[in-house]
Length: 134
Image (cartoon, rainbow, N blue to C red; front, side):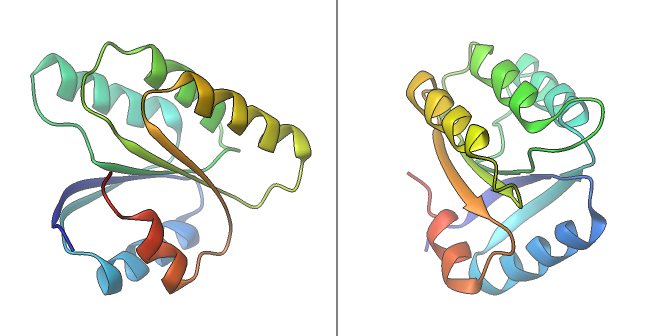
């Protein structure tokens, strides 16, 4: 498996962040894993990286329901950025609302990035699958 330089986890639940980090350490080699408690903090970081010509994270784990900037607002802003690098965005949610799945389909069609829709909790096999760089 290819070594990953950087992964972002965007979730306001520290237990979920801990679980994702723990599982990542078992399934994929990665230099840096950064976590953000809302989409705004992560977006600010990505914009800073982009402005300074630093590679973006190759993989993002994105929760949908967060304060300040939720996952959908984050995706809207990420898609609008003029970046060349393709990022794998793994939506990870506990939502069973069919509207969220419809939103995912809509964003998937609009984005040049790779998007996946996953339900919490993730298991080891799913984690291996959604951390493959495309």
